[in-house]
Amino acid sequence: MSPRGPARTLKSPDDLVAAGLVALSRRGEIERIAARYAIALTPAVARLIARGDPADPIARQYVPDARELVRDPAEDPDPIGDELKSPLPGVVHRYRDRVLIKLVSVCAVYCRFCFRREMVGPGAGALSEADFAAALDYVRARPEIWEAVLTGGDPLMLSARRLAATTQALAAIPHLKILRWHTRLPVAAPERVTNAMAAALTRGRDKTVYVALHANHPRELTREARAACRRLIDRGVAMVSQSVLLKGVNDDADTLEALMRAFVETRVKPYYLHHGDLAPGTAHLRTSIAEGQALMGELRRRLSGLALPTYVLDIPGAHGKVPIGPTYIAARPEGGWDVADPEGIARRYEDRVAADESRR
Ligand code: SF4
Image 1 (cartoon, rainbow, N blue to C red):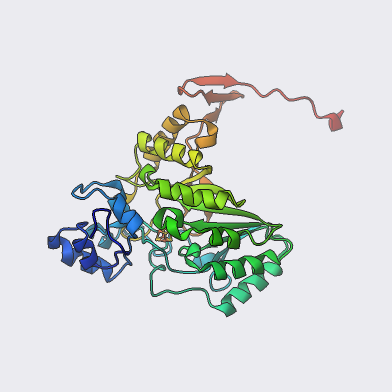
Image 2: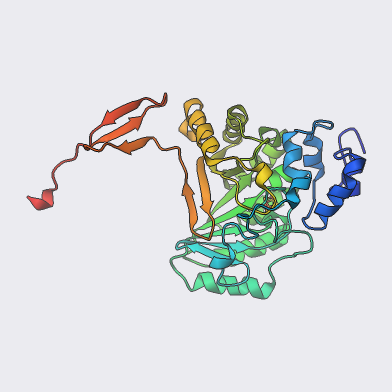
């Protein structure tokens, strides 16, 4: 291995030992996890990990841990209920105006907390042509669908040629206005985010293209990752962020503040901070909701609205995604409101509205 890190993606327990990311004594433990869940650390990610630091926040996201084989009874292989809302293979239709299309099941890296960890992996492949054609028919037949969310796995693992063909097919549906791609690639393999990829994503000229970047720690926003985002943005792609609140990775206000500032500096609007889903074997990476709310309260004191994500929970059982606070307003029993100011002090507010003209 060169001093700059491995030259190829690390996929096996032996790779992790050879790269100095796990001790030889843990090889058996990693074998047991590898038999159940996929492993992949790209060179870009492996380079970020501080060797010899068992608490390294990048390692916690990607290097397997024996606790992944411990299952809390509330955990579920399909924690947000994708299957319950799936009318066709690869299609999830949970909200009226948008549909999710899972184009591939592979990723450049495999995150230890992934909510689709039971479905993603190198053997899982891509949506077949016939299933993609059926997904297009489904969208075509529903004029209320305004947005397609392209996800997986990581859909930017497709070649530029396949991305262009996918964009073109979706762009031919007149009522579809927004194409939103969910990816970790600018962080995981920034060199793969090429000008050709940016051109492929923006091929449907009258469609608005969003890329939602998944990153959880400010160290992931390297110079190379920022340049990859720039290649997309300069071509006309709008970018938003998605992060997962993770114990030992970003569950402190300083890290979250730095992460959100890094997004904004990269022209990526902070969008969602997800509460950790109940994916199997991820309890050691979850925080409580109360901890998340306290962190969001602190972020609101430190950051402008431009840099604030919405803290959300995907309610298990396919009940959808909702903001989970903290809340700043409460109704007073005698009428009016108590509104907490940024310091947490309750300030009284009374509604003042004009009488309804139509009742006069
Ligand atoms: S890149 Fe996304 S889909 Fe893939 S393992 Fe990570 S969280 Fe899951």
